[in-house]
Length: 471
Image 1 (cartoon, rainbow, N blue to C red):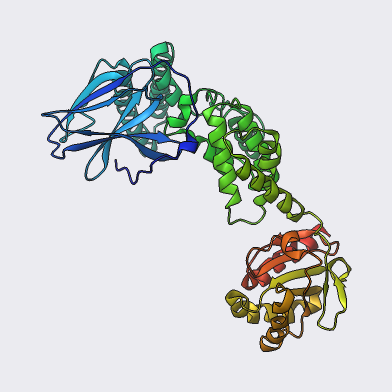
Image 2 (image 1 turned 135 degrees about the vertical axis):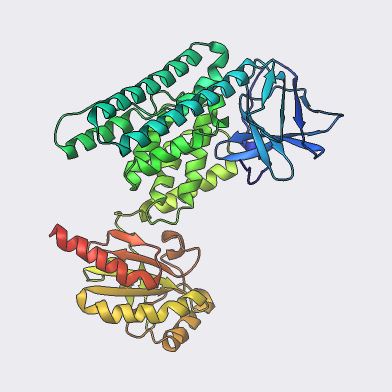
C-alpha cells in the first residue's frame, strides 16, 4: 500500500478537547528497513497527515509525546516509498510496541501490550481466509450446473457470512475494542430482506431499504470516527450514489446526516465544512443552492462556531447574493441602456427565452466566444430566443463598449450598458469575471446559468425539449 502525500493539518481543523494528560510511547522494530527515519501519520477525513517523526536508535524507532493521541487509525510510514503499516490507537492504551520485517510486513507483524491491534490483525487474517473460501465457492457455483451442488455451495456461503457476523459480534461485546467495532461498522452493509412484487418493485424497495438503513450502525457522535479511513467515503457514497443529484435532494440528505451528529462533534464540523466547500466550488450548475442552504440553516444559526467573525460575515454576504440567483428563482429585474440612452428593462424583454449575456470589451474569452454567440443567435432568434448583451464597463471605461460592439459585429444583439451603474448589476448578478450567462424563460425564471457561449446550442436544445415534453 502506498501513501501518496502528506499535508500538515491546519490548526483550525482541530477541535479543543479536554483529556487527562497521558504520554504516548510507541516502539517499532522493522527488520530489513534501512532508512533512519520512520513517520507516524494519521487519517483525518479523506486525507492523511503527519503527526510525529522518529529516528533510528540502535534497532528500533520510538515515538514519544507528552499529550495523548486522539483515537483513530494511524500509519507507520516507511521511507522513501511511503509504504505503511496501519495501526489503531485508542485513548486508553498508548504505550505499546510492534515489530515486523520488510519481507512480509503484514504477515510478520506482531504487537506487544496492544490487545486492540492484536485483535485488529487477527480479524483481518480471519477475514482474508473467509474471503478466499467465498471466492473459491462462488467460482465453483458459476462453473457447474448441478443444482444439488449449487444448493450445498449456497449453504456454505451462508455459513461464511454467519461466521463473519459472529466474529464481529464477539468484537463488539468487548468494550476495550470499541474503536475496532467503530471501524467495522463503517464497512458494514445493511442487510436487505426479500420483498414481494414485480422485479422492478423489488429493486425499488431494496434500494430504499438500503438507503434508509445505510447509517444504522454508524455512530457519528464518536469523535474517533473522523480519524478512520472509511468515514469520508461512507458520507460521500450516500450523497453521490444514493441521493438524486439535485440541490433539494442533496440538501435533505445533508440535513439527515448532520442530524445524526451532535453539533459539537468532530463529525458535525467535518461534514458541514467539507461539503460546504465542495459544493461552493462545484463545477455543476445549480449546486450553489446547497451552499446557500448550509449557510442559512447552520452557519447563520451559530453552528459554525469554529469560524472567525470576518469569514462568517463573508459567507453570509455570499449566500445573500447567491440566493436570488438560484435555479428556478425569478431573475432580479435590472434596467440598462442602449447607446442612445433608451432604457431596457430585463423583465420587459418579450421572448419565450431571454439570454442575459454580461461581457467586457477587454475580456479575451468574450472575444473568442463571440462568433459562437452570434451563430447561436442567428440559429435561434426565430425560435423565440432573445439576447440582452450587457457590457460590464462603467464610468469613462464604458466608451470602449460601443467600439467593441462594432469590432465584434454584435449589432444583431440588443446591446446595452449601465455607465453610472445605477442597476448595480455587478452585485445583483454576482459578476466577478466575464462573460456571465443566464438563460431565462418567458416569466424570467432562471433555467440555467454561467455556462460557456459554446454550450448554448446544446443547452437550449435540451431546455426546449423539456418544455415541449411538459406541454
